[in-house]
Length: 375
Ligand SMILES: *[C@@H]1O[C@H](CO)[C@@H](O)[C@H](O)[C@H]1NC(C)=O
Ligand SMILES: *[C@@H]1O[C@H](CO)[C@@H](O)[C@H](O)[C@H]1NC(C)=O
Ligand SMILES: *[C@@H]1O[C@H](CO)[C@@H](O)[C@H](O)[C@H]1NC(C)=O
Image (cartoon, rainbow, N blue to C red):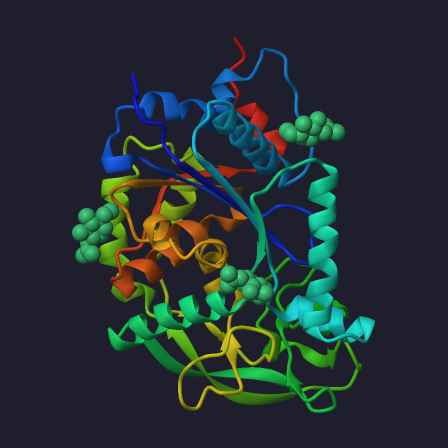
C-alpha cells in the first residue's frame, strides 16, 4: 500500500474559438520517485475497462476527454490526492485574427471575450478547475522563446524560403483556409487553399487557378517568404530512443502508437514553425520581427506556461521527468503534436523537460466505446 498520497496536476486546453476540448493532460508526481502506488494510480486512467456494463456514451470529438478528466479529477480529489486541475484556452493563430476582423475587435479583445464565455460554460457544468489559464501570457512568451533559443543554439532549426499567396489589399499573407479558387485537378470552382472538397485531393495553395482572398475577394499574388523549420529528421534518433523507453508497458492507446509509427515509417520532414501573422508569440530572431510562431509549435507549451502562471514552482512538475508521470488525453488528430512535435522540441531543447508518459487518444466517442470490452 501507498503511504504518501501522490500530488496530481491536471490540465486541459481549449482552442479559444471552439467549444470542444482538444486535448488535456494530467501530471502525476510520485514523491521521491516512488512507484509503490502505481497500481492504485492507474485506476482512474483506464475507465474503459471499468465502465459499468451497458454504458453507452454518445457524442462527438472532445467529449470523451472531458468526461475522463472530470471523472479523474473528482476521483483523485475523493481519494484526497493532492490535485491541481488546470484548464485553459489556446488563443493564438489565424482563426482568432480573422474572427477579430469580422467582429471589428482586436485579437486580444476577442480572446478576452471568448475566454470569459469558456470560463462561464465550465462553471455552469460545475467543472471546478483550480486555474483556468490562457496562452496569451508573458510566461507563454518566455517559455516558448526559451525552448526556441535552445533549439536554435543546438542546430535543430533550419531556414528556408516558401512561396505563399499574399493579398495586397488586406496587406497580409493568406493562410490556406483563406484562399479559394479553381481546383487544378478537377476544375471545381470553390476549392480551398489546402484541399478540394469535390475530388478530395490535397492542394498547394499557390497551384490554385484564379485564386481569391476569401476576405476581400481580390486576387492574391505569389510572394516568397523566409521561414524557420524544426529539423525533425535530426531529432528522429532521440525520439526513437525515448519512444522505445516510454511506450512499451505504458498506457499509450493502440491508435496513438499507430499514428506515431506511421509518421516515423513515412520519414519525418522538417516542419515549418513560423507564420506571417501578427497574432502569436514573437520570434526572437533577427529578420523575423514581423513573424510569429505557428500556433501548433507553441500551443502545447501552453500546459507549461499555464502552470507557470499559477505557481513559480512549475519546474517541479515540468522539469522533473523521473518523478512525474504525465498523462495526456486528446482526440486522435492531435496525437502528432503531443506525441511527436512536442517531445522532439523538448528533447532538442535539452532542458530536462517532463515528457508524456501515457498518451491516450480517442477517436470519436463511437470509436472509443467500441473498444470497451463488453463482459
Ligand atoms: C458542484 O460541485 C460542488 C463541489 O463538487 C458541489 O458541492 C455542488 O453541489 C455541485 N453543484 C451542482 C449544481 O451540481
Ligand atoms: C497570469 O496571466 C495573466 C494574464 O496575462 C496576468 O494578468 C497575471 O498577472 C499572470 N499571473 C502571474 C502570477 O504571472
Ligand atoms: C532531471 O530531473 C531529474 C529529476 O526528475 C533529476 O534527478 C536529474 O538530475 C535532472 N537532470 C538534469 C540533467 O538536470
